[in-house]
Image (cartoon, rainbow, N blue to C red; front, side):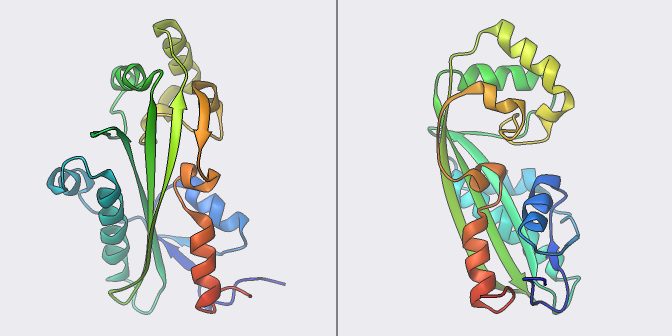
Length: 202
């Protein structure tokens, strides 16, 4: 028996395979429709240093963009920003950028800000931002190079350059925060909303 009570699958405005797998593992059927927005331009216009607001803005804009094309459908979008004090980081563009990013984060505590927005017919029904704090252990250049060899192109797939659910765990000495938030989707608040609105069995 399915826990999902919606008449159609939840629309996921993201190409993230991790977000899709998290939702599907929770019993939520998903239809993937990635949003086509200029994320870098929006980030450039965001308030300097406010990584939380930037994550929320990007999630909201993605959900609204996809919802415009899908009348009456429930659309979920998420985004994640990484900040080291007032400095924000984007997805590394290549191996060299990833190496530089790991050197900057080495031995320090950074924050991951995971935002989610749920929209239907142009109305924002739900928004939430959750924050995790991650402390990287001190990393030598030799280890960073070995890590980059092992991770391959995956270092350009996420804002931190790492996948905590995979070999990225070797980068850290301390983690504070919800596991799903670190993966890029604060799942428990989403499930609470969906239950409250009757989309999930209570």
